[in-house]
Length: 293
Image (cartoon, helix red, strand yellow):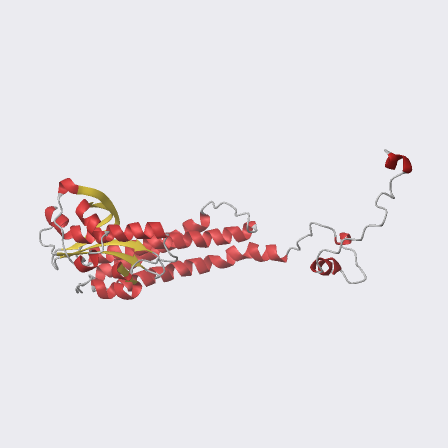
């Protein structure tokens, strides 16, 4: 992937950080105030704590996406967000073939009448000055993506990489000569192919911008807001742990034995006892009249 150097306007960078940090605090407030269902696996107060943190983590992902888009826009790129970009049948077929590895940098002419599907993209950034475009699918990357979904995204992005430059030129961005389609994996655990993945360590170098500084500042603002609420969220959890839990069965039901309270467990481990031998007269328990019948 060709490296380019761009410059963010200083005022733009400051405005981005301020706006992102404010959005991070609002996201934490929304996560805590949301009406979460009580998970029967946990105590109600624990369920609320777990749900609030899980909700905050989900809200972190869109803020990562926003940070990347805002930084690219501030550097002078034309940025589109959350759109479907068309790919042709020929590009999809090549992406699914064994020949793709040898033709990954090839461009296939986009033909409007041969659209096979639309690829969902989080950010499309076009830098005509540097004659390059990026189509980005952005993942927080806290866990592996389900296999079927991951393979479909990889195929779509590989196909889009073949068509994108031609498509953008037909849309009026005539100076675009190179196009990339990538997954941005912020935490690095989404599980996508390395060939199409940008981890957090590669983001700044790829775009030539201090994007990670904005993402990290936003993340710290979000963490600080969560930490400020932690004591309030933990208080009912601690109180719940201090309350004694009454047993469902009375302790009186557990009777001591000569071998201790848990002798029943040891007896079970001895296996099935041998069947007692039968007496020589198996019908001794029957009366004489019943035997005659």
